[in-house]
Length: 178
Image (cartoon, rainbow, N blue to C red; front, side):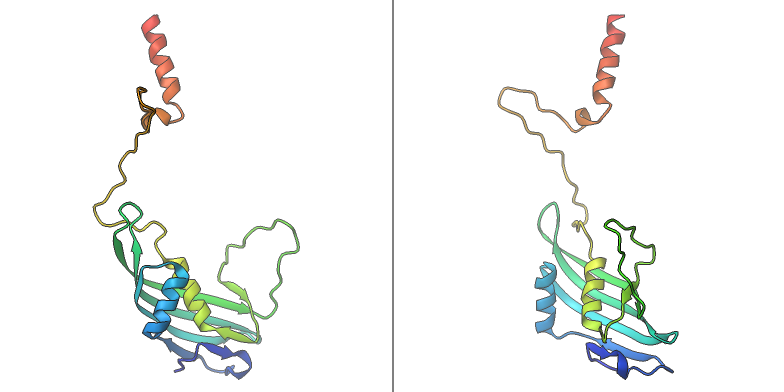
């Protein structure tokens, strides 16, 4: 099992999987936390294997485990989240970027171009970034309704801003007039 973060493709055996296990030290955890804008990164592990897929491609399968601390989107208090997710990547030797100015993103988002190395550290940080909660919220906290208005004027509520709220009010006033 290797704890190297960069694997040279030319050194990988074709006939068996190459297992790996990454557990960054506290200094690297701090670097990753700053890079991803986290308040803290307590634990991080990335364990799996890289194996040949056909004659020229390589498949990475791994488990990512992390404990992250992010600010709550409502209160800005620290929110601790445990992340455990499977990571899969297929490194393709015959990768070609789309030629068109606008191209559809393929459903298979696990594929990447194969270079001379597979950077396990980069895959680990990318997988962590994709697994982070987008809007972390402290348990039991809800976003209240904010109401703003100029002095002396009635504030508009969220209910009144709904697309058909104005039509409902018009309908109600027409019923009263008839």
